Length: 150
Image 1: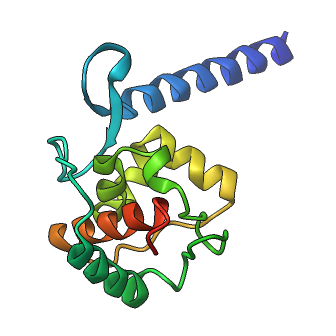
Image 2: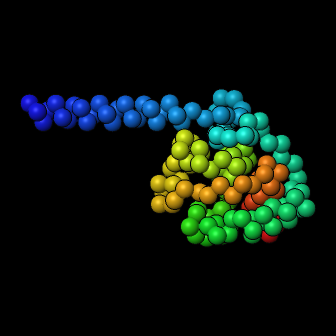
């Protein structure tokens, strides 16, 4: 009888935790219906308007990347953090910028970020105190890399 009670208690705990995680994983989305995408959690709450790649902005993003990101990230290979090649094809621009700007909350509440941490067996991404302008420059750098325009 005691084992059944313990098993029920453990199962109830798992269900409650799953519900709480689900509540915390609400995500902002852009678009409607099937076109909705995960924007992540952070200061970028409106869709980022993407036009032709701005080479000057991409070059500034490369400078930021080299100064603040290369201790953990590489292009074309997994390092401490995930491989960033193709990131703009896998994630929404807003999600990428929010991950850069708000890594602590993203890793705690965003289901995609949580999965990345678990898949890559990685530690908490450090908050590099990047500005929104620098995050946009990094996005442009990633876009240029992902189109083969190194």
